[in-house]
Length: 154
Image (tube, rainbow, N blue to C red; front, side):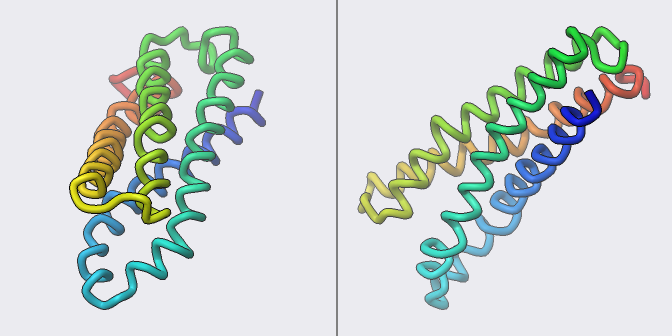
């Protein structure tokens, strides 16, 4: 069971780390990168790889989390917890945002398949889904930590 937990935590750190990178660094840096002509190389070279790891880390976080949960037969370290269920629901919503909203829009943006209002709309949808995930990650992390440390009174 420790292997499932280790894998879950490892890919979860990768996922949430990239989520915070996109929300705290990329979003604020893109206007300056556009001004200096660095946005195109970034979006063509770095961004596709970062998004690959981002979406697959989301998927593997959910998969390893479900394996870890199933291995504990519905408990975490012997604590039956409504908190872990809430954390799981938030994590699944976040993963669905990645695969159903963020990635499809980013794929179109990177490919240069959109212009004008359609491009602005795709950027806005991807941004809002990513920002939603950033905010949902906070209560999700609280639930996950609390479930392993005796509840919210930890």
